[in-house]
Image 1 (spheres, rainbow, N blue to C red):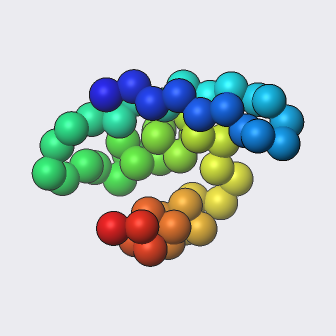
Image 2: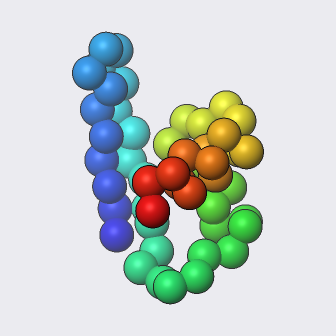
Length: 52
């Protein structure tokens, strides 16, 4: 699935590809984090945990 995000403060656009699997490898999560512009992979994972 492709997700599109537009930052309301900067107008920056990001397109992120997210697989629709029950489990996602660490490498895939790193790729998603990079596409999303995450600077800190650990914080990215913590936020994912918080949301689910």
